[in-house]
Image 1 (cartoon, protein in one colour):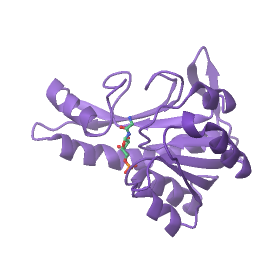
Image 2 (tube, rainbow, N blue to C red):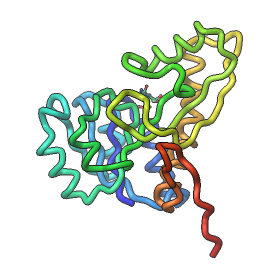
Image 3 (cartoon, helix red, strand yellow):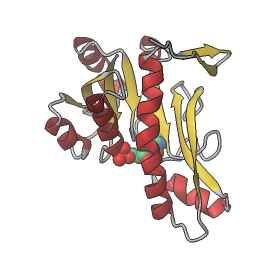
Length: 205
Ligand code: GAR
């Protein structure tokens, strides 16, 4: 499986995916990083890892034909959004059916949707009085945070938590969860029926 990671921020999830490929807990290769802005910290991480970077100049729609060419040139078979703050247009979703994943820093379908990203998510969770939060890896469809859920893991919300302390705890869980979800795809273990996921047992060798 040949992964392109799309990111807008520091890229700690990008790093966890690259690390998992190096450790061979993820049987895949990260072949491309797509950054939404030239200041994104993920760019330096990608260069350090020797992975080519494509920087979007504007929205995906503005760059769609060039982006599709770049993805094709690198023979990308899976797209992983990791803190990517741009909407994925229908054209790209149609080109990679059930092959675009996103990680969200809460337990979807709660605390998701338009405007719910980064620290806003954790602020809303803390304000709600919820005792649990967590991370969700899901397939991307045309609505924000609404595609089929692949994996989730819970994280406790402590009475003393701020959005920042909760974000840090959730991020640690994200770093383990995203490579695990990608590995299910690498091993062809995902079956979708009526937009609901089931897992095919791994083959013992
Ligand atoms: C992560 O917490 C990710 O779940 C979140 O942005 C952060 C990126 O961190 N994504 C969203 O909020 C998308 N709705 P990173 O750049 O260190 O991987």
